[in-house]
Length: 353
Image (tube, rainbow, N blue to C red):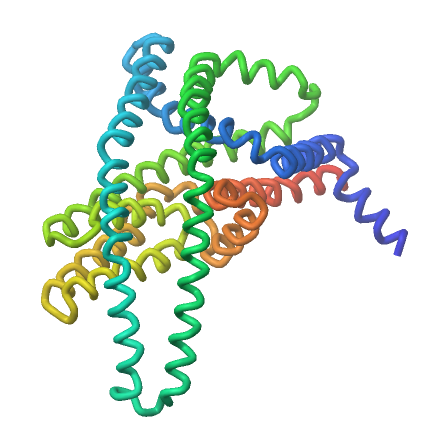
């Protein structure tokens, strides 16, 4: 057994470049696991910097100096944040307040629907329906307790948001402005013989940049194209639902299924089995179809070259490790794993030869 392990070690780690790459992966994973919460503003700044770097490069290709391109891109970012804070968020907040006010009526409709099951479907006994209703009410009590705890922590959350609003834009500006100096500073700590690590990083860096920019663009496109038909049909909570539908694309496959449930329920409670309900469903499902079959292949043709099962497993694994950030970076992290696996055999063959 020891001889087998020694042979495996000599085959896979005899090359110093493989050891360097493994050390980078272990150190990076340990840093995120231990200080992921503290580094959340840095991760947010990196994501936004990746998005804006595409605009910076586009402006630089027109002959504009990088500093001017960075300033213009940063102003676009600040204007977008201002539009979000003073345009979308107040509207969503108003609709959420309306939803909380109308929530008892929705609950009453749900209870009436549950109580009507024995008459429409005699196969379900009344005792089972009452038990289901009791469980439903117990879950509502838990949800109410969670809402109270969230409201008590709103002051802390508001303070954290204010810190983010100051720290993250500053990080974004300096990450864009001093990109070459920062990369040069990091490369000082790399050994001279780190070709494999550099190769993997270049592959992942290019795919990660395309993925993050594509994901942000997909969120905006899906959110807007969902809002238009919902607003035309005067559906309740159109802006809030569209925001959630847009954000749902962060979680591949699972997000689309999860967000469809509230869309269907709210549309059903508003219109019932009427033509308006079916019109909204056709429009909504049309947006989902175009997103999955047109927009995603167009944005991620060179990035997401993985089986759907591998993507779902990546979301579950990295989401379980790092929460929201793990879900967002699940595909880039899976791409990193894929790049390492693809590069590893070539190094082993070199070592064997």
